[in-house]
Amino acid sequence: MKTSAIQLIAIAVVCSLAACSTVTVTTDYDHSAAFGKYKTYTLAPAPAGQMLRPTSETALRNAIRSQLAARGITESTSGKGDIAIVRHAFTEEKISVQQYTDWGYGYGGGYAGAWPYGYGSYGMWAGAPTTYTDVRNYTQGTLVLDVVDTSTRKLVFRGTGTAVVGG
Image 1: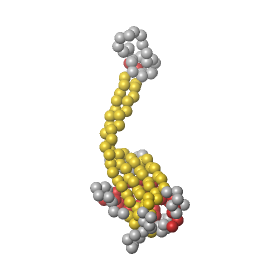
Image 2: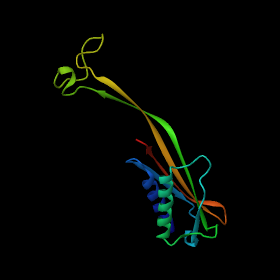
Image 3: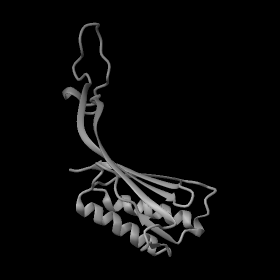
Image 4: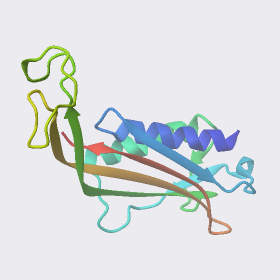
């Protein structure tokens, strides 16, 4: 039950931070970990250079707090909880290249029902297909949430969300 709770946290956080329509979420956990023993947590500070915008940072922390509180896991006030939640956020510039061919069936080159073949050995025929290439630059963002058992210092859960970010 605690495993599904942590998975729901990862999904909720990733979805709340995504500025896009499609988020790819993956999760994995230590099958031997006793998730029922975790009662408190701490939110580890962000690694150097991995700052989120203040509104995104607040949304992330609020989502973690509310999802864990709903499952009986409270934030530690003494400094060290049973688990530490460590987040990693980064972006990467990507290029998408898509090619498609307009074979002209039904409307090709002015010939209704034109077929993609012709006669002769020189050049293209009337209504021959045209290949289009669409090149698009975009930014891919990734948020990784690691849940670490503070007594053993072992990773017990990792949730990863990846999506196109920005506009």
